[in-house]
Length: 316
Image 1 (spheres, rainbow, N blue to C red):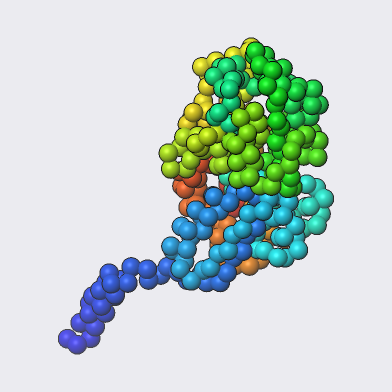
Image 2: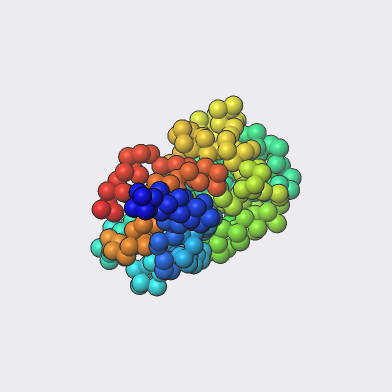
């Protein structure tokens, strides 16, 4: 009789233990992860870190933003475990050991101050791609009237990024150029560029969407307006081009291919060589699987199943 009761008693004790210790079986991973790089990926990386640590409380994660160029340099010099890069990885970086994983997608948008004296007219006609080229590349357009075909002699103050970054690289790629070809007053970082455009009534810049919209309300940040792109070049923003008021509408437009690529682009986590560290591997697997459910709510776009599967295969 004593032996017959042993298994039920042990099972009951185990049930009681699991009820009183709901994290049993979780948190087996421990150690420290460090990230550096793109401002574009910073909010998403922070969200992923928060959720990953809930299941793995013994893991410590350090994340710093400083631009895609810094992220790539830091990871290739083994200063961090993972670099955050918001542009395509260059062949020369691959030769040095850069091993990239596409983890999500977003876009760069043109921004201006909500106090621009011609705001209503600008939002109605939009920014033609060739006009943007003549603002940031050739410097041909010096006034808002020239750039947007409106009645305005106000000068146009052009801003760009001073740090090596994916946002500037992908914005320049929109014109078939590179970051060093962009004209304008250089400002460090996404937050700095957004603030410069906000404070200057005749200023224009560009930002990753995460710095042009409020994550909580999904609306454009106070004092900033996203400049719509006149994709069909007919001199007005048609209904099917008008998807900028809400972050959710813009994300949906990007996912459906309505917004051009570039400046829509994939975002990458980069390691120095194929990852061998167990914690790095498990984090990347989690990001490509369970972590994808946090992408939309954080203001980003999910990757295709093909890209996700490719990343998971590269981790084997």
